[in-house]
Length: 357
Image (cartoon, rainbow, N blue to C red; front, top):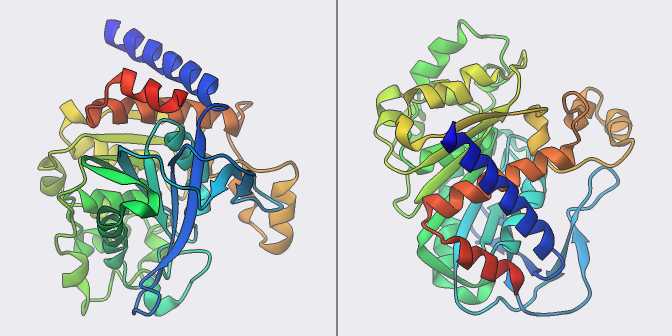
């Protein structure tokens, strides 16, 4: 009980700190195409602390979704900063976690997010989508670039690097910290769960392709990642229990409040929590959250607008009960910030100093 009360107190304190500092801390923003002439160019977004001033613009804004105010191409703030790498879900983009990236930058983090070719809004090429094993490599490529070029988004503290992923992005970051996927295990499991949305992606993502199974089942991890956060992930049941049990870095597992028919939290996030080392794996279901509550905030009438162009996808803007997505995001930000500060050994006074600049 005392531990629970302490965690709630810390979350409340962090939320107050962040609200007080939002007007004081600027967020720099930059976009590049990594390896534009290569076989797999990456459109990458970076958010980072900056001391620069200038005209703010909203990035990630469109008729359906709110954006975040940033200073485009501002000079990064001097000094080392912890890094958070983001991975979006199937069919998504860096814009989906724009809200989280902005909030973390206020707390002094550098944040980077690539659009994964083949599984992003910008690129649904079927042949590329079937190269699922390249998703973790996308994140590693972005990390390598940041470590080599501090002028891009600031100097990265190499001992304080974390990864956060939503949905298929959750699968991606789990791969980065040592989870091993078994194509056969997942295909066999789907024989009993054919109605689940991730099981319906077996062919789309190339999971059943025996010619590439060795690539997908290989070790795809990065030793640089010191902590990971899974946001209502998918494909979890393909991870081998023994590989999950051997993961040595802290993992925060957050899921929707209730099981959905197509992506039940108990069979995905619950599966992770069952096999990951319990002493380093806090697991919470977020009150009022659906699978899509982890995405950006919808504008009024966004659901109707989305339905007009893509029937059935208006569900993206639906949350549970009377709780707003903005309120859900504030809880997520507080929980994530609290976890990262402990997992990356980041003192509270350092976080306050970063946000108050």
